[in-house]
Every structure is written in C-alpha cells, then in structure tokens.
Image (cartoon, rainbow, N blue to C red; front, side):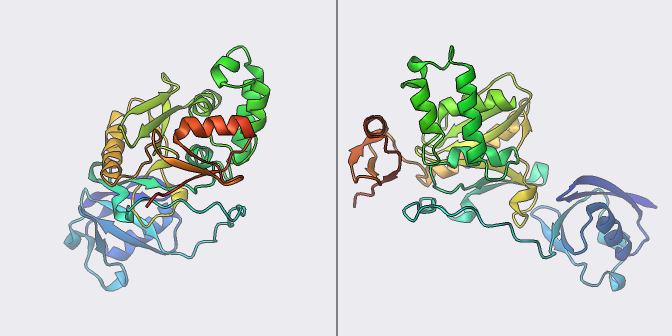
Length: 315
C-alpha cells in the first residue's frame, strides 16, 4: 500500500510516495536522490526526534515506522567546503556579542512550519545594517556594493534626498556613506527598499515597534534593531543547518512571520539585548572623545568627520 511522506531538505521541500512494505533502505535512497546529499540524518515528529538510518538494510520495514503523513527533516552530515574568511577588520573593531543572551535564546520553535525562527548575529564592524540586509538577499560581502548603490541612488534623486532630509550636504553625506566605518540607518534602509523592491521590516528590540520601509511590496525581509546594531531574522528547518540554506524572504501577506519575529524580539528584550541610545555613553575610537547619546555622537561626527564609535561601559 503506498504512503506519502513529506521531506524538508536544504534544497527545498518535496513529497515522496513509497510502498509501506518497502525497507527503510528504499526510503533512504529516495531521499538521497531528491536531496542530492550523500550523507545525512533524519528527524521527525515534534519535538523532532532522530530516525535511526545507520543500518537501513537491517531495520524495520516502513510500515512499522508509522511514517505515513510525517515530515522528515534532512540534515546534511557531509564535510562542507569552508567559507572563505571575511576580510580582516581593524584591531579595535571587536565582534559583537549579545548581552547575556545564550544561543538557545536566539531562536523560537515554529512547529507549524517544521523549523525555527532564528537571530543571525552580525559582526559589530559599523556595517552591520548592510551585512544584515545584504545577507538576506544573498549578497556576499555586501557592504561595499550596497554603500555604492545607496550613494548612486542619492545622486540620482537629489530632489528627494536634499540637505533637509539628509541633515548634511548631499555630497558630504555620500562621501561619508561610501566609507566602510560609517553606520547605516533609516535613510539607507528606505533607499535599499526602493532599489531591491522589497519591504524591509525593522523590529526595535527596546520598544517592539516594527518600522516598515517600502510598504506595498510583494516580499519582505526582517531585521532586528537593538539601538546601535542590526541583526537578521531567518527561518531554518533545523538548528544544525548552515546559514547558507536559511529562508530570509517572506510574502508581505504573511503576518504570521512578523508575529513570530516579535515573539523572538520580546525574548531579546527581556534579556536587555539593546542599547538605550538616549543615554548611552560613546567613545570615539579615533580621538577618545566621550559623549552621551546618539545626538551628541552625530554632532561629533559632523564636526570632526570621525566615524568609529564604541559603547563605553560604565561600571
């Protein structure tokens, strides 16, 4: 008697049909063919539990495993070619570390869709916004490309992005934004939304407010703003999967993903995973100037051209 089994693998979801009297080895062979993987593990049910395929030739027939209608999650175990290391950063630029947030607190289970919504933490290198968005659309080392695109967009739309909007002479603003240590923010998100025809939903961890850049688009990406830092939201079928197979785009009609993202942001808020930009203390890493709040930092940036800041922890 044929039965149907859903399979979620890094290359997508498929439905298999197999006779319930067939051995497990036949199912493993089908999954290998569909997924293109030579070596993998299988999980099923909720919470996910492993299906032993270490010796499929001697295991029970499929009927005995009661897999009809189940969803099998395929996790690759093959050795992967390592990703080339990122370009080196200056010594004073330290990796961003979540404030007292452990890895199991940066993901929420989504059993209805057979996976997890996760926080992908970006490096704290003053390009986190560009990296968060660029990774969501599949760009490698996106900061340079996105900065140049933003600059060209402003040049081509000086009627819209004038000094009153930018808070500075457009040419000076563009020159600053092309530099790799300049922070990106709301203006850049709005421009990138237009360039890539995507809604960018930015969730503020402190307030749980959702700022939508580029409404009335068909697709969206979701990022998280924690005061002076941006991270990316992604969906993964298994926490052991590499980030390269993340799902990072959703239909703008999919309100469920926003609610799930807010659930994750609420967890981060409870862990105080944010910086209050109204009273945080910043230190200029170029001249050791110390000031309080984002407004003072912006003023110092305009007066000196300095753009490398770090939060100063007062103990």
